Image 1 (cartoon, rainbow, N blue to C red):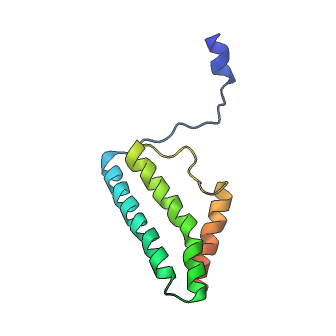
Image 2 (image 1 turned 30 degrees about the vertical axis):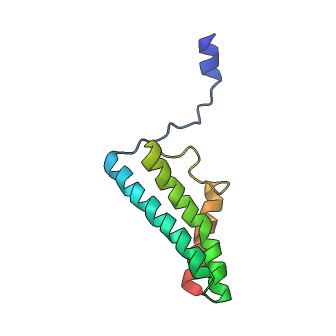
Length: 107
């Protein structure tokens, strides 16, 4: 019975990568700085112009993405099972990053 259950498992699933301790400590710093950045964006958004507020709001998913990656590395010691969260796929993440960076260069 066990051999059939093993055969039925998907071969496309990759094992999660483990993270070493020095990088876990660095990840804790990224989580702390990301938390400060999110709180700072909330307070700074009230004093900026209208376009800056939208730019700060649009940057929240990117900040949440990097903070979640760092949190999983620091707390669990492994990469997250879905590294693209809160985005649906890596293509959507790439498009978001391209547009996000473009808004800062061409705004």
